[in-house]
Image 1 (cartoon, helix red, strand yellow):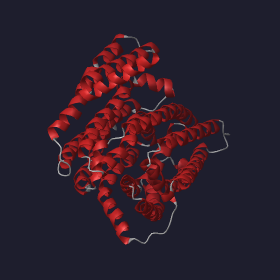
Image 2 (image 1 turned 180 degrees about the horizontal axis):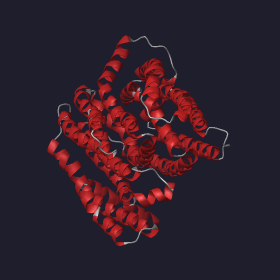
Image 3 (image 1 turned 90 degrees about the horizontal axis):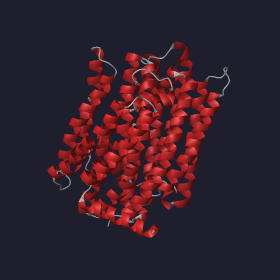
Image 4 (image 1 turned 180 degrees about the vertical axis):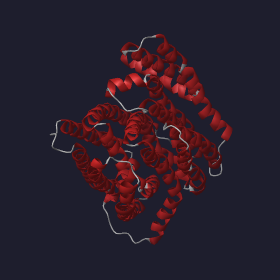
Length: 508
């Protein structure tokens, strides 16, 4: 049986965390951008991204870790659960060593020989790079502990720690702002961010070791388990390489052609994207364990119901914020940052459109991971997504604008979605037409119904805070209306009516 109450509770907890974190993070970004300046802000974003390029192995292993821990917990095999945790931690330690070697060789060459950084800031860039390496090593060895928390569905821990983290980052922003002119603010900022990473890592580890028996490390010699996890991981590598190609690969490409100013614009756009996607990602964090556990128990009908509904609602949660942000992006940026780099407006709109489409993909990918059949998906879809990088390079070489990079990513992603939907049929018995109609059909209709009135208000009123409020309010009203009457099935409507009536009776 699907634990709907647990999903709802975890989603609410993650949402409160997300709202608080989002507001503080956006304010922190304003302070940091003003304190560092556009070029140093861009350098911090792109230099840290060089390290991220080497973490595709760790990302693939992270998905495997979460999947295997959740499966064993769902089966209540606690001996195998402990073995799995210790095995994955051992593998992550080895991966950290490998990434360290790559970062100090290939990464350094890329930083010094290929990237466009003002000569007078190269010294600071080296410090940022080394601090980023250490922080990455922390995060790599932290993955099994975070996977254990998610498998146990203790999302309140994420909420508490996220609040601590965002407050520490806010304090850092004020320290950087008030730093003496004699101190290199970029170096100080990257060092303090490393300290925060270390503190958060220690908190999570202490909690896991204290509360979960499987998190007590012991040396494992089960070669079959190592082979099983690594074999599963190897199939996920191409998919994660594609993520790196579309993320940090594109960021470095923009740096080579346009310099750190465009990297700053991209960094701001992804800051907005990160704030908005926290709504749908929080929902998916709560849904993911239930999807995997239902599959482990053989409840295919429950898996499909969760797949259809979570795909739709992930999109709707993104759309609620995407519509007013895209319409009023210039006003938001002026209020938030004051001055901002060129291309920020178009970058933000294109990134949010891409993330809207990606929000539908999340639950389907979780089902692929639950089945364990990810080889074909990653070989085809992953390879296709990797092509975004050379295609973008071709257009930029021909003189295309920086925006062309994001247009290429959207086009390639939509093609990959068609392939992914077809491949899923091979591993789970579902009706493709029904999926497309219930998910994509509803998403398109809700979007078309929700857009006209906010756009009409935008073009009818003068720019300002009043117009912004009207656009936001009308977007929310139209979204609620269209989601309820178009995007919601009969059973969900009945549950909503019943819940509303119970609340009314309770207060009466």
